[in-house]
Image (cartoon, rainbow, N blue to C red):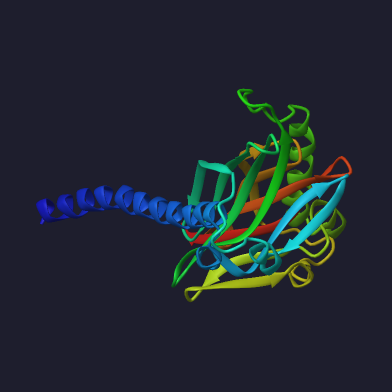
Length: 266
């Protein structure tokens, strides 16, 4: 019996990393559909990679610009080769949600785009739900500069407004953290589900304390775009939530554009 139990534990420890690696490879496959589809002009590949709700967000002249996913795909001419060189920089994954970071170099324009892509896994596989972009001008041979370090205090301020605002039902602090029109994305019964920001805010009664303990566990940022990973524990419900937040800097202030989350019990 002890031998059987030891085998089960050992087998579980071996399978867990293997499953995690398989998920990363699946995410890479979706990201490569996006990379290849935009490079060789293949709209079908892009439709496979993107969720139906997909949109693209960037800041231009200190103003939020939103490009509909359908318009973005339509701009890609089938069969046309585009001079763009892309590589996957990193992937962070928790259960059925993830963030991918991609750098795309445009030699003709001497520009580099840093993409942060929000992904969720439904029955059909991993889908890119949204993407945000930071765009820089750069000469050939130059190294891509790191994001401005003075972005970090402002980013933390926004994240604390979200974490402390939701813990204390301070609706003003919550709304100050999010951009108008934000949504929350999660997977339910194998399908990507959308909770509007307006309905999300209805969960908070002004002044009511919520037993939720949040902490920032990761941030990656460029000059105008970032993602953050936040862990929220809810002891009364034995629940752990991992948030991925897409952020853009608009008029000097960091705002959460959209959020995804995955939950598990502990």
